[in-house]
Length: 435
Ligand code: IFM
Image 1 (cartoon, protein in one colour):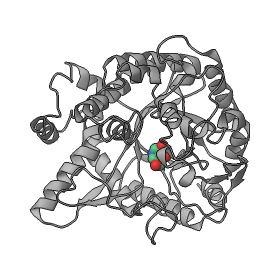
Image 2: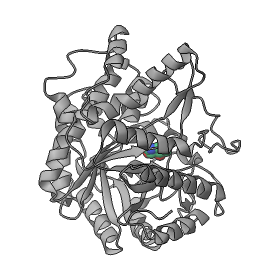
Image 3: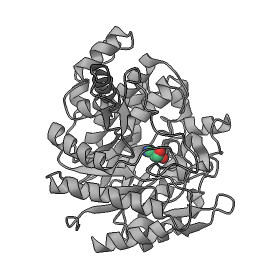
Image 4: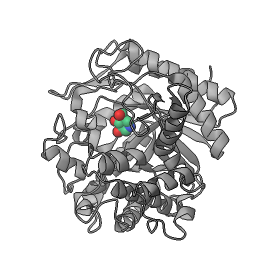
């Protein structure tokens, strides 16, 4: 399959997962705090040391022939306490990195928020507080005015479901809080922050291509029993519709608002007049992060632990995250997004597999090839999908799982920090060249 000309061939990373470099005025983020508290399998202090080794990483991206690289900005590098003084050294780092990318012909796609909220803002209530939206607006202004001349592709927020649900409802990700009302407030404010940032970026970055990256979990009922069907419908609302619907201008799904209200989780004063219009800001693309699909059974309408346990020897058909490999679900989900929401364009802003073998990572190649075919199938069915980002450029710090999960096209030895391209790197290079 040949992809349309102009198709974006990318790879993605995020600041906390690769940079390290707690220096040059960088402030503390909630993930630094989680790391300091020993809640990650490995410390995030150094990660891939990209902060000091970015030139080597940029050179490798040039060799790979990427047309785009998706990175995130660490809010605390730019505004150490989230709101106050700008840290010029932090902005300079990103300016150098972006200029380096442009020099090797790789377009930067910049994500403003990939979960590393300034700890100072969390201390004032974090995402459940509406004031965090004001802080994000200022941060978006600072970054877009500093980098908007050279960055033309922007993602406001990465995976709002994860930040709100795992961070504030399930308490397994930073900041580790467990309260449904706080989680739904966090989710609303993340979306509001997204909506408020869109016009700011457009104003400060001429001809910008602006979107959001929403994580999805396609699902089907485990059986056709009414109980499984009902559980599946709830799961789809909880996991997918809750975020895609408002961004696309449909507001929050009524069935879910009703249930959340009944369960005492929903505060009707949360959504102010005009919020839903802001959240529905027209976008140039809808980004979707896809890894796996699940079956939902009665009683498990708000859980996604239906894969196998994570570990180094997954059965065939699963990755080391324990996630089932279902490329066809990506096709179907892209078709669904297109039918339901009619986005101007769709971009797969993350897709990839965790396998530890290196450098001969044939299973990763098989996974990526099957998912690219799935994107091609969607295009054949009329979906305006025009970009794909492999997660991830290099092995990195997989949040609480630390270095135990390796998603990279490039192997990183976390003792020496040496980078070694894997077989998948060569495969992707050839795939990109073939178009
Ligand atoms: O590593 C994460 C990334 O930060 C967000 N999306 C999923 C990836 C794999 O778990």
